[in-house]
Image (cartoon, rainbow, N blue to C red; front, side, top):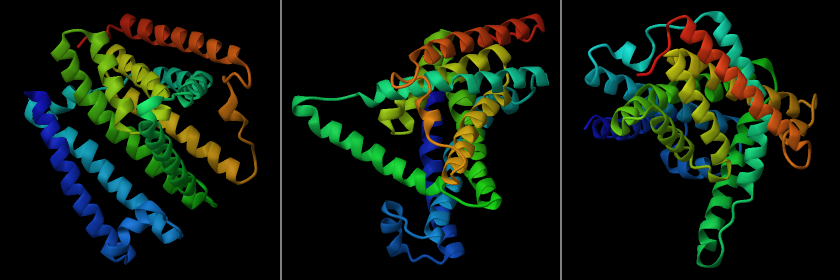
Length: 299
């Protein structure tokens, strides 16, 4: 019942904040309603791209953050504690987690490579075409979001693509859903894996599902072992901010796209294996430190 209630709140928040975002966007950017469908499919000017960033930010805050706060308020007598916001670990844990996320990049890239080889045959070719077209359109939009000049636009991208998703998505997926799934299946590990599956599918980018699933598992265990959602928000932020900064420097001509190839068969597969080993060790270090501090959380 708590899960169904949360799902109802999420859907209601999504509908309400879509209307709020559209109405606010139309007023702020002076864009007629009839032009919105075309802009969503193919933004061509800086004003249209700014309009889409505004929509994404408002809808994301409503869909994830506001719905999570409402659900936690009605589910628990201590909403902040339920969400994992009542305490934060020492700075050393944050540094370890930041390093862990950065060192997971080679394996992330290799999982992206494996995911890109997904294919359907026979009567399922339509699904293959849909997935490829969907991924291509999303990637094209993200390129338009990320290809900016100047510190001001870079800061806006960090807020829109790194800060807001890190806070809002973690509130819903790890703060609420993971706890409900763990309670539902009565197993921490299954709860984490189910949440990671939902997290991966929710982005509707099936050719990059595996790396999101992998990160979802990491974030899930970090929450269980630290008991703090601030840690998973920080990890999520580091992951997204790294991409924003890299592509900023890429579009400035400071670097090339070789970072996307680290850990893939075209580069050095050993990097992916080493990445997996190092991330596993760092996770165990975080677990041991938190356990020694008597902050080990098993829900």
